[in-house]
Image (tube, rainbow, N blue to C red; front, top):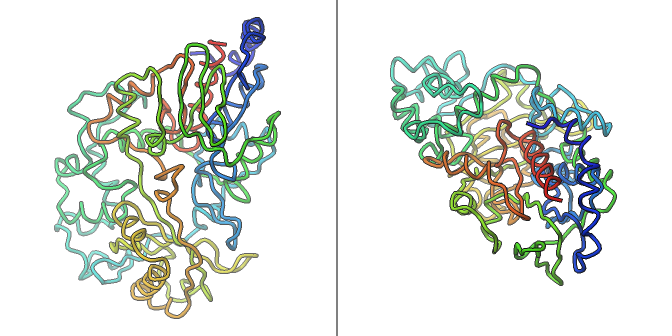
Length: 471
């Protein structure tokens, strides 16, 4: 595989190869048009510009960052997406150092501050600390499971998942491994109650729709990257903003691509007021949003299937101001972990000791996110406060829900991140390896061995390399 250094060193040859026909391109606005100003798109734009290509970056939102979104209008500027940076995110660490973007190993506003160990559990209407969970009336696990806290149940039964070594071996795993997480948990002996509690705060939509290979890949990535987790000082959006500032041209904000057509001599992008033509295009739109944009191109059946079907986790957040840091007075752990779908988990963002007032973040996924989205906003805010107060009486009268944020309601995201759907590993593997003629794709959903923000950078780098070999 071409190293990053060799890739950049070889760009002069690509520039020479591209120079001759450029005068004949006529209607083209750019050598490369990039759809999306998230990490994948900006990474590709940087590398293409360094190779001497003219680049246009189109972003449908009126901000830079994609799913790295810092809510600067809320106290403490909490993050709504793209929060934790793994120790093995080598590309991200390198880019941040180059651009002078500061990282901190102390969890920031989006991830929750350093917390007291464990969780305060509210299960079936009964509250329990880690010390008394085993005897709690809400604990209906099997005798062999009762001592395991709800938040630790998935890790316990995940020992039965396939071991992926190397990480990319998920791409050619036997079909019998591509079963649902629910089926895998049953095979591992998890009771129905254990499955219910795991699903209550599952990092996905439900146990049936996620392949066990996705979990196995996630755990393999975590094992390969020991070390501290960090965050971007000031919010995750500061990184893509810094990347965009280094580009030669400004990112075109508020430019929605309405249709994509790959032609023999270029790619046409239909915008609101005109058609933009580029010699090549890199599309970084999440598939959950891309499936709503007409595409005319030579796509393989597996790739077309993934655009249509690849699942994305539905996630909704609520940002809550507290009149005082009540969690310091009731002697329970900071984090509230519940089986209430409307509440999910509630993390402490700040305790009021700094510039920001005491703030909390509610995180719910799947059916819980759907429930929250269906409620009128003011009714949802009242229900959130009342249910948190019921689970944690020390919060009574002290909560103000400032904002509810839903990723699946965003037409340019329609979910927070992808996962391998049950029975989809082979099709996603083929999609990851797909190479178009003039239309190329990138995004965290198309990485080979990375996850999260690093996955976006990995795929953007690979797409840029493909563009250069064809310029």
